[in-house]
Image (tube, rainbow, N blue to C red; front, side):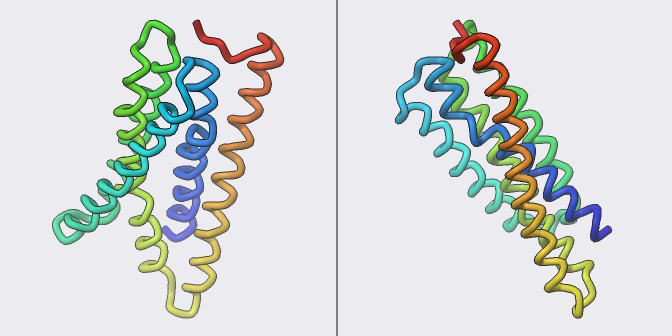
Length: 166
């Protein structure tokens, strides 16, 4: 259980932050939003992450921790998939705010419970190692997600010369 939960944390950070790192670039250069408007999408996701964390903490006695992880992962995937549609010129760009907020809400549901699972399952003498593994996976997940997304953005720029979507 322990290695699986640590890996899931890395996958979660890779997935979310691989998109998060390029949200403003895509919305500014691709859809023509101002920096403030594009940044509001990140703010919405941050507020929704907080709401998801609150929901998880408020209901942690009612539902098992693993359920929050499963539901949170699903919500992140749905939110990111819906957000990707906002990059299509025919889709109203304002939908970027609620769709990326959905992904943020999913992060709030799943992110902290993964740490709880790892630390709960780790023997007392291994909790420092488990905590370090979580930290490493967060860093690797973010770096790999951002790097892969950056390679995709660079390839798109190289092939077309810009990020214009319309």
